Image (cartoon, one colour):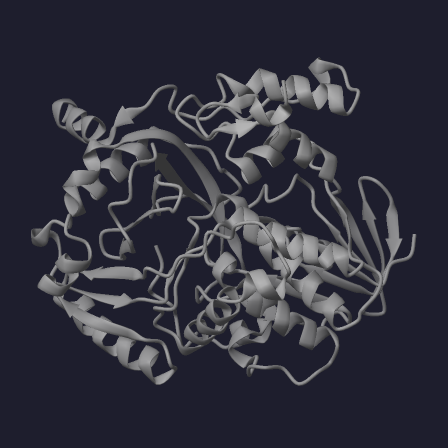
Length: 381
Length: 93
């Protein structure tokens, strides 16, 4: 079978890339996914969207993506509820070092047009009164950060892409990418084979493996990050509350449930996405330390999902000089959902050889050839 | 009785009509429906709706019921207070 462009992965990145290409008039786009709708990292993420980053590149990607989310319903002509709420991220500083780092972050963010500000403890307590005042020393807040429903956001892109003629195939897994003279010739899946010259690796947790199939070494790996959800209650908390040093993010979603997650510094590399009692123990202790009131809520479910980690914790949105027609959007290190509008835009520009909206140097695969990586994003849970 | 009046998921107030609407659009598994309607994500964790929805999928796609996968079963089996989880650890320590 012949196809013009094959996108591997129908998560938020894949559907956004497909939509952006189709909107520019590209025909013959096929998106395949080895599972069901949003079965990968997109459907497992913490549903937060934020602009408070420590590297310039992440700040810009995030800000321009938020600008899109603000008008997403209209742009994508989607009638469902994206549950977008901009009640902010409140990021707690618990050490002097963090307080000083956050002061620098806010200067960078403001310079880039992100309306974040540093708050005293009292100001933070006014925004989230149930914070334990002994657990932090100051905070930063950005009102335009917030929550977005990953399932409906993905569906909005998916339906808009379908309307523009994009074809989707679920439960279809790539097995082999054949090349000749540094060009792609054929992609073989568990269902059929495609003669195709342009392939996009948006395989999320499996991006490294898809790279290997094409003979491209992408320095990413996956690790399990777990989340739990409580019973829904009436609204008591507007913003996402987050702390890097305490290793927690916790928000009340519009539906009423609290979602909270944390990383496991000892998590082995790999594709494990199971739930553990150790996470439950650590999560319960951490959230009660920061917000004791939340201890009165019942946990009703927990799950895990893959962060696809890159060496500098910033995404790889790139082509490669090793294989013509091979593109990748991966290594989002846990933040692919909130950057998706820019992922789709930038990758469509790269594929169509247009002038890119942003300078791609800090997102390109080539950056890892340098011996030391200059800007590592530390604002990651 | 109208499909709009039949509640399939009591945790999230989802009707039979909403289930049929998504099946008509081409979504075909419990996992798809769960992501778009929150069926199975509530306090009962699909104990009520799980088999009802399995039956609806089976009828809609004319498949044998044993060929329709059920939802992924996740912890917890019942709701537990976060503070109980945190406090019980202290006893173990």
